[in-house]
Length: 236
Ligand SMILES: [Zn+2]
Image (tube, rainbow, N blue to C red; front, side, top):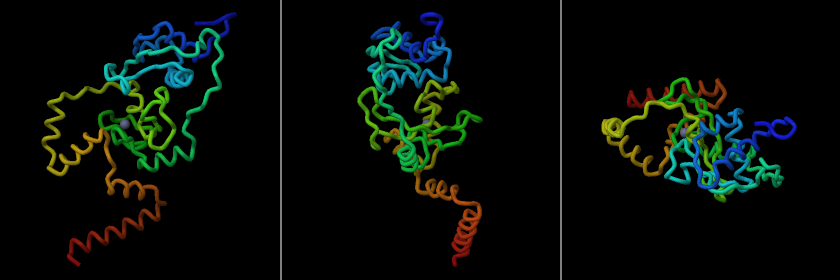
């Protein structure tokens, strides 16, 4: 869609136009949005920008009636598509030091599914995790940039409709697999389910710390640990 005198509308205006056409109460899927706004990679970012201009767009995280790929327009904000001037955007980006602090606190692990930065998703081999800092209470709902409202999430958990569609497991399959785990694993699994997120064990944290040492230091720690293991095995 082009604007006056053939000037291309900004992707922000295009997204606003699409949302306004849905109107308050209208729902749409991400695919529909992508079809309407060809510069796909920008659509998510533009929705975030619009939320800061008073647009209220719910996703499944705040509205359990929505499917993971579905959005609901609750209220229109600044009509940038009609040339209304956007208020100065208060950038809600998480700054470098804060970003690093949150990543560090969360052990560079998605707090929803437990995947680590650069790790392959267990159900999608070949696809690696990229971590972002997400708001627990969305900015559009008044969520702040405070540490307790921020957490590390992978691209799939922070934006589930970006995920490829792996074959969904059945309830039976999940339960069967869980039932086959040893008792301590069941207890751990249950605690994760209860918390709604996977915690990082001390062992995993140590491994992560070790993996960031220089190669020579890693070798030193490995050699020392090997000695400890041998000593314990030989009862010394
Ligand atoms: Zn995740």
